[in-house]
Image (cartoon, rainbow, N blue to C red; front, side, top):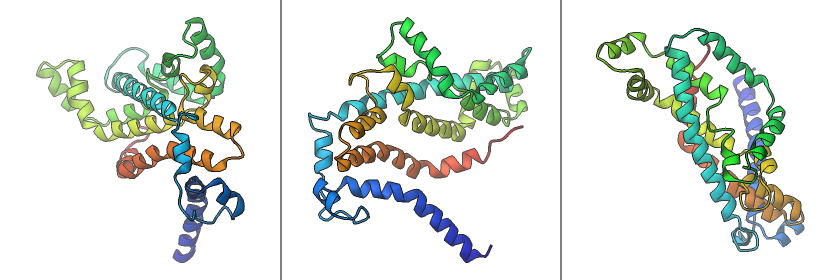
Length: 270
């Protein structure tokens, strides 16, 4: 394939990928009348922010879902990082009977679809009296995940054993080695895991939809879906909500894209 044709294919792929986002952004700044009377691909003229004013007004109350989602993501992020780092260090650098078998058994749970675990998790949360609470949103996800442990383990294995042995000779224990040597040397991959965790849980939809009712603990994805079902004639309002939901993720990718690429390129099975 020639260089010119390659670029054409890449440009076409970029347009197909970015097109829905651009269309959503343009629609968010149109009035309902303009959206109904003009082709969807026309840019907003004039640009209006009335949809965002309505979205954050008292009738729709979109501030609460954003706050709930931010709190949920923050708690899950801290839990995922702390517990995944500790588990990955144990699987990478500690020696105990059945270590590799236990790791591969744990990793095999990646093959189980999330939908299979929804009913057991729902039953557990209901039995514990946590349904429609903040803790029901975060507890199933804050104690690490197979993907996070695998990602960190593969990187921790690249830390020289001689360095850890030297630290042990100097009297450092595993806790100190982990948090003062291994973790600082793995800032890049930890940052990558943090970004992946934020993105995946900011976009989490199925579990919050099932475990919460009403508006008290409604997250941004559920709130946007409710707007779509209740106000499907007002697509400009729905697209404004979609734009608000996407904005933090776009900022994260724009700021940390180099870190993501460089860190993931260092991982792999060993």
